[in-house]
Image (cartoon, rainbow, N blue to C red; front, side, top):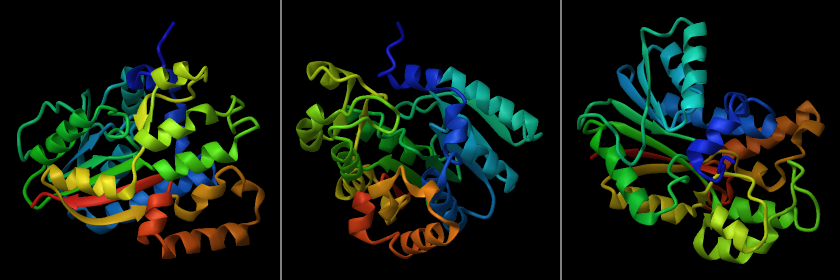
Length: 282
């Protein structure tokens, strides 16, 4: 039986759902829209971009369509196959390289890339603290001086709120709520198959570490990056993630406007399901 608490195995099994994830509903589109807004703002006008943990290639395809040369690396062979297919369907093969790789040990020269992306949570899937530090050091090492590094991770407070919200009823995916692990999740930020097994809970995702905003900033700065901004991606919408598609267009528009207005409010960043750090190699 496949151990789907292992990130590589989890995303192999997740398959094409990862390509669809960022457009499947209003809530998930907020992550995409917020991320692209900051890429537009901080990326250099041209150059070679590394997409670390880029999975099925959503951001890689977008970057290539904007005229960047892109190298995508990921642990999951299944996700890499999907990425190659998506790149091929759009005739972007001349701009894109897709290969297996690990954020903790990037097989590239120092200063090789003009910008580096690590989006959606690859650093969150590095549960060991020392290995997270190694991952950030690698992101810095392969990015040229002055180049931007974009890192988004999964937020702890959002995970806690979502777990509390589902206490006593089924989760949005139909599985039993994982509230028995809540106290230890708050203490450590770690969600693992081992922790779930200890409490008799069926894991619903790969092992990961959920972040507070201060922790993300500290991790990046200790790794030699200068953090320029932190941004909430889903932001205020993180408190009711399953209910937006039942709202009318006017109400969703207001939610999006409020989310945009509060995107860099520190308390909202801390609450967001995903938070994005824009950093730079000094």
